[in-house]
Image 1 (cartoon, chains in turn cyan, red):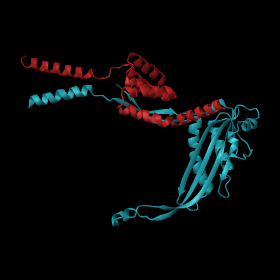
Image 2 (cartoon, one colour; image 1 turned 90 degrees about the vertical axis):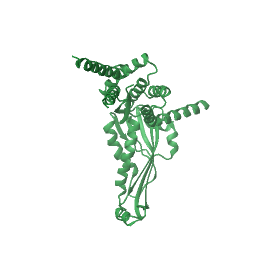
Image 3 (tube, one colour; image 1 turned 120 degrees about the vertical axis):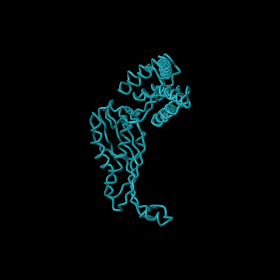
Length: 219
Length: 128
């Protein structure tokens, strides 16, 4: 008995001595990859978007400009200006000469433009599974069908280099949010959705850092 | 006296066990020093240490994985990819390495997408 306990103690001592973690978990702030180097530009020009659809009483172009201009000014060291030229068709995005002409010699400008559509609809929503028992019913107070107000913001965004007229970045963002309030105001919903678009756009365009876990191996 | 001798032998035996066990511990080498530097946010120092570790042992999975993480931190995507891929060849089953590489790939989907576009555009230009 005494011999056994001694052997166990020896084994434990040996294991304790050689045990160590094979890794270290670290939270690392990693930069996002961005094809756009904003620091290379002196000016960002927000050009009106080609609006395919918008609810009555909302001017999507004005809302986009009103929201993005101050947000960009917070992050971008250069100037942020608005251009009131109206785009006629999507073809313009693929015409470098159009953007070069619009830049009128200011080669250090970057155009922010695109196509946008903001829609609203009311949908029926299934709230929960039908209760199978009395107990389940008491746990899920609401079940069956209900109505939701759904807003969708669909943005196809272009960042076009004035010098070449070529798009540096083109991304499609589709953001949807549903509201239980059937009288939800479209301008408030727009604000909710444009915030999400901004977060994604800035991560792409500014290469903003994000915290992620990584494992460093010790052996 | 007769009791002290066996007790001394037992203590000596236990100490030798401890020492033997400790020999399996990673020594304060370049890899661990690099980890310490990374934890202090001294990523350039960490890169230097892990590069040295690789120079001493090119098959060091730990050094390659850690160097890849440091390259990610620096935004050196291609270098990070290269180190991850070499490390994965050396140790394809390492779960921590695989987890790192998966996160890296998720982040890099955008980069690949853009590179694909650039390639297509270049091909178009060539055809023209």
